[in-house]
Length: 295
Image (cartoon, rainbow, N blue to C red; front, side, top):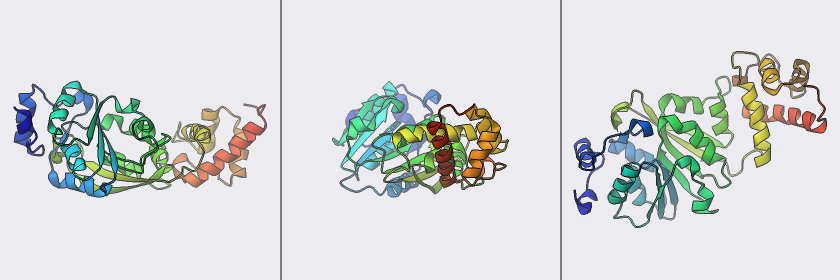
């Protein structure tokens, strides 16, 4: 198939997509979580959710065939598309060749430093994320010195529900996202919107990133150490989880929780981010003021 013809292929048309892949000796690669979006209405919802402006710079990770890349390129000033699979990257170069402001990067998205790509310029992240790498992707980009202003990503429906959960049903993943921004679900996406169809539905998730994270970079590492300890044994009361996770005596943990005005019988999923920060400050101050605190 000639490059000029590939430019015109409707990548949401299943028959055309299959023919294109076959012509290049390719098929969806399960190892890379390749499920190609074939629903144009969903595609439009993703772009609309990102509120792309003509001056925007956009990062797309896991660009695949370029079905989303081309839509973004029609709206944004610059689109940086990241793809690791070599054959797919070759195809992507052909499907996006009509857009000179699309830049392709061959790299594992977790080894991409957006500060090297965008400097301090604001950008938006828009992507159809492979299910197996969702949580690491959020952490990688949200913790960066120059995080995206907005993330609009396709994730597994159940994962999206976990991320937007409120105190009482919070998880480590939810706190890891909500610490940095405000997430909400734009739309549910049925499995049939993809080729091949995954076994579960997906969701378009938008995260509006806070202008400034609640804690400094160094403080965040210590904060999440406490949160991770709290969720290390979710079925236990929080004082027990923290005792085992932080390796301090139980009476110390109980005392710190009392000082932070948090009932020691509560469980990790019930604490709000504000309560976690308050508890962390109490523990951090006590352990840093007195390094000889018995463990």
